[in-house]
Image: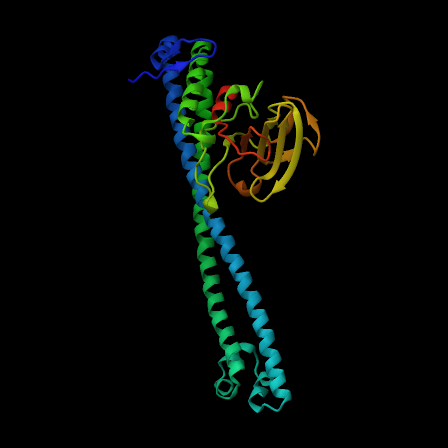
Length: 346
């Protein structure tokens, strides 16, 4: 097996995977169980991510189709009004054929009536043709919307199945971690931190930030499980700019630094909290089920700022905290929080 060097803070000594194995010799079975559980959770989490993206994409198409239907209906209302005005005007000026407008049971019958089509003026025919074409397009859009809604039920069922699988894998991962001995756990944790930073070092914000950029950082969601999902695809061509921390609905979420908070509610993030640390870095919490703070309030590190949930576009999915780090403040770019979270949350 290839040995991967890991640097331990405060020491120039490198720690390899084989050295972790040696330190965990007394709990080798527990370490093997943990590694298997960790791999199973990662696989389940990635499957859930894919299922969530599938739901998001169908919801995105559903919204676009609904919007197109609304626009088409608005256009038809305008055209119908023009048609009625023209028909009334023609009748009032003794246009005999247009008396059909007042004798026919519905506008659709007028549009298709042979008598109307042979006697109406050309501008009236244009409006009638526009209405007929618009109705055909509207029927097509409504049919497409029905197909999308059927697809949505399917992908939501798949997401629910993936959610259950992920939650079971998460519980197994956490239980296996608790079985590791103290020294074994310490070295395995450090190994994971350095592996996370190495894997995230793809350049730019994906590499995360050094510990010096988040002094005294604590875990925002103790007991949660998460993978490095930075850059994963999202609906509408977006990519993931944070870490999704999976855990029980309603669990406490903590301020990772002392500073000032701002709360909000949006379509994507749902109920959100920003914690802007006194040292300038901003931390974003999304999909909360509720708040424990208000706009402009000062918080101390470790204060409860809200509660885990699935609000916003996470509605119906697994409860989780979407967490971001913005080193230059709220207006600045996000960086990958995963390496920082691994260091604080194990």
